[in-house]
Length: 536
Image 1 (cartoon, rainbow, N blue to C red):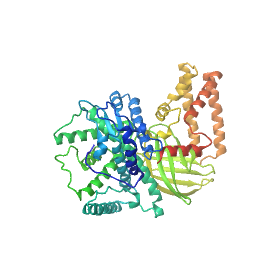
Image 2: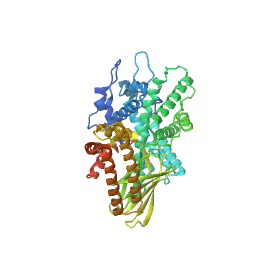
Image 3: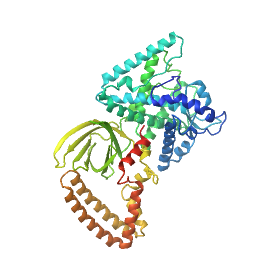
Image 4: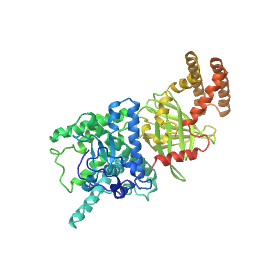
């Protein structure tokens, strides 16, 4: 990573914890010289520490990377990831410029990412979220440029004053308030968006930081005295990390915003101090790295074509609330969807048309909703919510800015008894169906016949369900169609499996669904727990 001595500070929660963390932990966890295996800082952070959530998240991100490598049978990546450590070396604290180290030396082959560097990443993540707000209407390009011009002017005034009074140069202050005044109620939705974007930027950049250093190991890099050769290695490690992030199911959108934030602050800093000599630096400039990223990769692309999780704030009379829309990817041949509004979960169905996904949902009060995600292949799509009354009469439409999360990041969706990645894999196609059928002791011929029957039953149910969700049949008509189809399907399955195996299949299916489905009652509590665990 770039070892330029740029100290950053923030009034945000991300950087307020840096000093507290250093004072609380350096004595107990700073590795001694010559330590063979640096100890992960997350294991030593007290639960009541202000930085506890950050280091729990770091630990989760490392586990997810290792799990993703195992799922893909990537032995080389798995081996190097086992040597990754998040640590606080005492030398780095003394020098006050945290970094990350990976190129092996004679006596060490650990990938060491300093906890202080993660704190620095967190500071730039918040600014990166503001960079990303260019995608939304209220912060058009001109407003964005003017805002950051004021930001640089403010920093130059404080820096000049500090030098004149022989004080330590000030750190950067990244505050949403400087860009989006809190006393303007129109900014409420933007605050929610910026907070979610900061989370994406933080997660993406930490994952990229780790994989960049892993890339040095995998690519066999050795330290180079030649600055040009060293810079080429850094760009090679960048490219390797971006490619691997995409392969592992991550978006790289947040890293692009992080690079943008580094450019903003570099431009400000260069007005007061000489720029780093590009010819003698071991690292390319942030501008060069950003140019390579945008030239070679689709930075705005969503993570993958599997499950889509789109979040958007909606302004109501009672205030602003965050909604979560979940639906399957275009190539999954699935249609089940859900919308969480105010802690309540409603189930629906999905239809795709090119890059546009439409989710149909019935409300408990009798009306229905349609959510149109105009380009669900992007991290920053737009969502339209169309509303209909119980008589299926159109009431109106609301347009909202949205953010798409990466499924691989969503550790909160894991149930205690099943990993999310495990559930996702087993629910593709008929994998789970065949597993449960074989568990009943059915022959392979019966498994094939029963699987075909279940697939046909699901297709007919889906057709009736979508008619109901679109308001083309009422609830009584849907129930009659469902009852008739259930009776027909039950008779067919009994003929294939027999009473005992059919009863066993029903029992196994119920147990499996209860392992990972949210409870039918208490959805408010379930959703609140998810939000508390995942969203900061």
